[in-house]
Image (cartoon, rainbow, N blue to C red; front, side, top):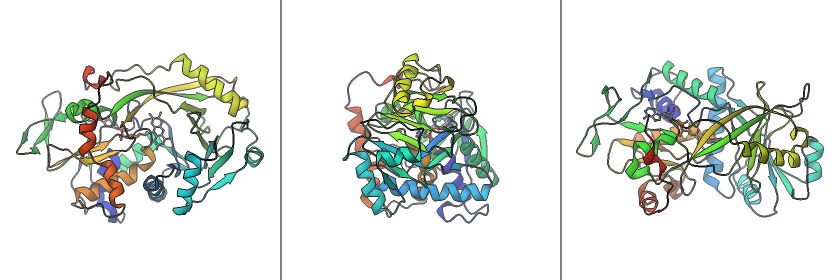
Length: 397
Ligand SMILES: Cc1cc2nc3c(=O)[nH]c(=O)nc-3n(C[C@H](O)[C@H](O)[C@H](O)COP(=O)(O)OP(=O)(O)OC[C@H]3O[C@@H](n4cnc5c(N)ncnc54)[C@H](O)[C@@H]3O)c2cc1C
């Protein structure tokens, strides 16, 4: 979110014509470097899909973001997207996938509904059990090369004249409802007209009063399973990215000689993104194998060849936070990715820069954009009780 926002702001906003200049003078400060392994964006790959249930705004944003990914992939000469397709396993006629089909139709997104027999005929490496009612396939979706994309966006930002600095900061002095500067642990200070904090899972610790209870940071285990020698069935493009909403698993075919990725889409325990040990729980392996046995039997007994621990930064309603800070006129927050923001990155940055440029009216998507506001969500979250405010127990750096 931060890199795309910095890029659009530096390069000249949504009307960017590929030439440097015309935008703002932007400095991007990052505590650990672009796409580092603690960042939520720092994994190898992320899924890009348009299906978002009945939610038409995210469906549309995902398509608009895809246009940007493809455009900049061409312009920058970097491989950012693998159009392997995205496949949903539906276990009910009505539900997320059925609602998605209606929204995809309305938004003119290419898709196919596949009966279990058709699905297995196309991808015989998939196991169809009695739970599988149908498949929803998006042929133009697929996989984004996440860590590599962070580096590519940051490099493009620098080519457009932006300044990139390794520095960890927190809000500094303020005056009359404006933030004057941010400050490093060493005491070094950076001043600016406008500040954007796109600090992913660190936002609750940076703004504990406003975001401490609004963003919940959870540990998410990710496994890469190695197929048998010479077995290409689980690599892109032989297999699409996939998701099973009801079983709460998703995965990505092997790309760039990494394994077949599988991860649970349910919330792990609370996690400290700065100092948490990134070791997967043995139970995550056991449960993933159980799912593989059902849906990808050819991998059920294959070894885990790599693993990652990432974190979700969840808002209670799963919607992103893209808004002005309630106490400072010149401070903006972008975060609360809630496990689905990576693909939307270029659209989020473009939207935020449009708002920085003064477009307060929610022009394009109308009242739907109210979902991104901090406003009432901060007070609702503050009223939440329970022991999930662990951000108050960890240090920022
Ligand atoms: C396991 C997993 C799977 C996911 N799968 C998908 C998927 O398939 N598709 C999808 O679209 N999304 C997916 N997501 C969600 C997506 O990855 C995140 O929503 C997104 O990457 C969040 O990006 P961000 O820019 O908000 O945060 P981050 O990537 O964490 O970036 C925050 C940056 O802020 C910097 N920072 C923090 N604090 C400071 C400070 N005080 N000073 C300076 N710099 C600071 C950090 O160093 C970091 O670089 C997944 C997430 C996880 C964890």
